[in-house]
Length: 300
Ligand code: CP
Image 1: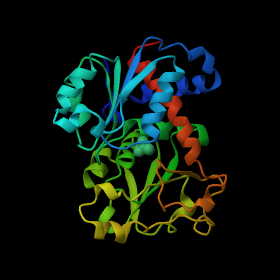
Image 2 (image 1 turned 90 degrees about the vertical axis):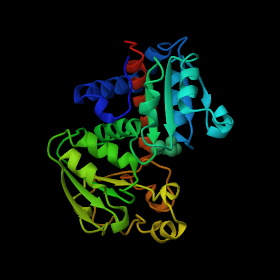
Image 3 (image 1 turned 90 degrees about the horizontal axis):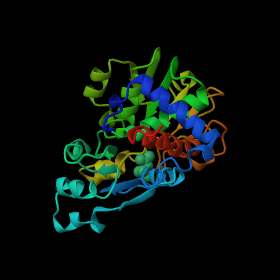
C-alpha cells in the first residue's frame, strides 16, 4: 500500500510514468472511463479548496468511481471534538483511498498510520502540496517539452507557500535547474528548503531584475490565512502585481504559472497573453490526479 505525503515519496521514474499515463488519459479518455468502477475516493478537506478537491472528485468520476467526503471541518464530527485519527479510522472503513487537506503540518502523515487505505496529502498547512507539484510538473512537461535545463522564477510568498516548497524539492532532482527566488524579506524561502534540496539559486526582491532570463515564472498568492497579524498581511499582499508592462522584457516562450487561487498578484490583463498557462495548469491537475489514483489503487 502506497501513500503520497511528500513529493519525494515518488521516484523520478515514477513521476515520468505518471506523466505518460496522464498524457494517455488526455488522448484516450474512453479507455479509462471504467477503471475505478466500484472504487470510492473520500475527500476530507479540513481547509477550503476549489481546485484540489473538485479535480480529485472529477478525476474519480471520470475513472468510473464514486466520491464521498466533506469540504469543511464544520460539516464533519470534527466540530464535535473528534480527533483526526478517529476520523481517518472511520473513513477508512468506507473508502478505498483518501485525499486529505489539513491546516496542521504533518496531519496527513499521522493519518497514514491510522488506516490501511492510501492517504494522499492534498495540502498540509505551510508544508507540502505534492499533488499540486505533480500538476506543475505535468504543466511544465507539456508546455516546455522538458523537465531539465530550465530557469525557474518563484515569486511572492515563498515562506508559507507549500506549493513552492514541494516544487523546489521536485525540480531539484532534474539536471541544470536554476532558481530565482523573488520575495520581500519577510516572505523569503525557508533555509531548510534551500539546504535540503541542494539547489542552484539566486534571491531578489525585484520581479523585473531577472525576468528576461526565466523559462518559467511561478507566481504565488500572499496567504492571508498563514499570517499572525493582519497589519503585516496588508503591507505585503500587493507587493507584486504581474502586468503587461513587467512582461515586456520576458522571453516570448515564458510559461507563467500560478497554483491559484489568485488575488491581485497577476493582473487580469495578463490572462489573454499566450504565455499565461495558469488555467491550462488547472486542467492538467485533473489528469495527473487520475493517473495518481490509478497508481495508488494499483490499477493497471
Ligand atoms: N492550488 C490549490 O491548491 O487550489 P485550491 O486551494 O483551490 O485547492
